[in-house]
Image (tube, one colour):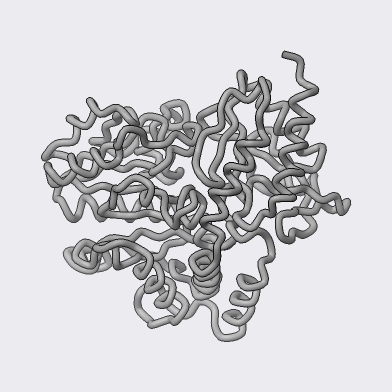
Length: 393
C-alpha cells in the first residue's frame, strides 16, 4: 500500500507522514498495525465531533438509503440542504440569512469574492499579509504569502495587502474597494487574534466607504473557539461569512452566507452567477446538519473554553514561548522550527498526532475534536511535555 501511495497518488510534499490508516473512532486514529494515535488535530479542524460519531454516521446512512446526487445545485428541493441552511440562519445574526453550499472552503471563498464584485461593481480586493484562504486561483490571489504564489502567477489583478491588526492600514480601504477579506483568527500565520477592537474598526471602515467585509471562518467556525463563529467574540458582523471544514463533520463542504439582498444577486445579471454540480450534496448536507445540531444543542462550545484553560495550565515549559488562539484552536510557539519538527515527529512516534501551520514554522497545531475528554487532554499534554524534556536547550 505504501509503495502504491507514492506511485499513484499525487503528493503535496516530498515527505508526507505516510501513516497507513485502518480505522478511527472518537479521539483516536488507528494504523494498520492497530496502533492507536490520540488525535490533537481533528483532520485540521474538520472533525469537530471526533471520528465515527454515531449521530453523524447515522445521518449519512439514513440519507444514503434515500437518494444521493439527483440534480445540480439549487434546482430541486432537497431536505438536508434546506434544513442545514435554515439552521445556520437561525444561529446567525441578521442579516446573515441565506447560504450557498459548496464542495470546499476554497470554493466558498471564490463565490464570496465573486459576490463582492457583483454587489459593488468594484474590482479592488484587500487581503492581509500571511493570510490563507485556500489554493484555487482566486483564493491563491488573496493569499498573503508570496513564496507559495510566485510559481502560479499571473493571478487576479487589483489585489492589495495590509497588515492584520494594523489600524493605520485601514485607510487603504476606499471607495474603490469591493471587499476586504480577513480570517477572523489568522490560521496559517500562527493563530493570530484580533486585538484592540481591530475587527470592529475594519467593520466600521467598510461601512463608511461601501466596501463589503468577508470573514473567513473556515478554521475557527463551528464551535471551535467556544462560540459557533469566531466573529462573535469581536463585535463584528461580516457582510459575507465563509465557512467549511468543521461544518461537514468529516465530509467535504464549504458555504458562504450573506443577506438575501446580496445573495440573490447571483441568480440574475448574469443568471447562474455561481454554479456547482455537487454543492449541497444530500449526503454531505445530512452529515453537516447532524454536526451543527449536536454542536448547537450540546455543551461542547462552553466546554471548549474550559478545555483551553486545562491545556494552558498543563503546557508550561521553557520551550513553549506562548500559546496562541482561543478555545480548541491553539498553537504552541517554540523557539525554532527544528524544535517544532522534533515535537511533532516524536509525538507521533509516541501515539499523539500534532501538525504544523503553513506560514509559522515555529508553531505546533493543537486543534483536537471538541468532544475530546479531559483525561485525553491530560494524556496528550503529558506526551508533549515528555518530548520537550528530551530536547536539549
